[in-house]
Image 1 (tube, rainbow, N blue to C red):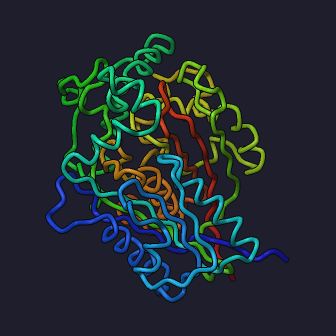
Image 2: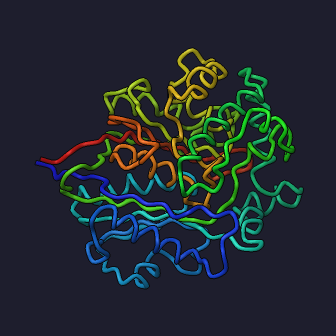
Length: 381
């Protein structure tokens, strides 16, 4: 009989807009690792597998971090898929555990941005950014996603009030999450009055850059309550940047995801979608079938704004903040935490099934990577 595998511990450090002196990427990753192991009831010596993603740990890499932490590993993987890294690491770690290559795997993501670190990152993000976009003054993703947002508004009838309703709902969730960078509730009027950054994107449409880290611990043969991977899917470079950006790679693989999970959108009791911009959150929900009639404004106003769809229940990146590569891990941590029953005042009673997505690695128009995982709460007896 196949060995059971499960997520048994999760953690996320405070997500800091203005971190104090002395903060480092390695220190944040170490903090997240220790807290996730505490959550799982484990110690550093129990870890024999490590998956890590970070933009700012350089020049160190995953194996350097493992050495500094005193880890002796049988499996080690470094991932560099940005917003898609969390689900990608989860899929690869699951395969490693199934193959017996490790017994306890820690997945880490985190970044600390100081001074001009973030500007340097997006200016030279890849060859396209460095050679084609940045010389034109198009530095960072805001201008690219302003165009995608404008297209969604024109083609799908989404208005600024709809994007605002999503942001207001997620900020209300963040108010109950101590690690979130932004917890003060906002109103729709606050959203509409926010200064424009790159029309039609205002300050509240653009994911805030923070410093922080997150971690997930997986075990073979877990005892007690754990979270298992019911299905996962991914699509990379699905349209070779020739589409309109309103359809992510999830559209092509959603049918297989739901078939493998033997479930559908209506069965998901907690959902985290990658939300660097509201338009991208809606695009993923649409691709996955949450707007069965294709009416995105109705999805926002009747399900997201009302809370009947438990979306990004820790605030999402738009309120909690995007700690570089930890942006995708934020959603995975929250879904797993909800299914483990450890979400405190945010807890969705009886949550058994959840969905987490990843999206990112912008080329010259929009993200190249999309992936998703359906997770399930189980209890070993």
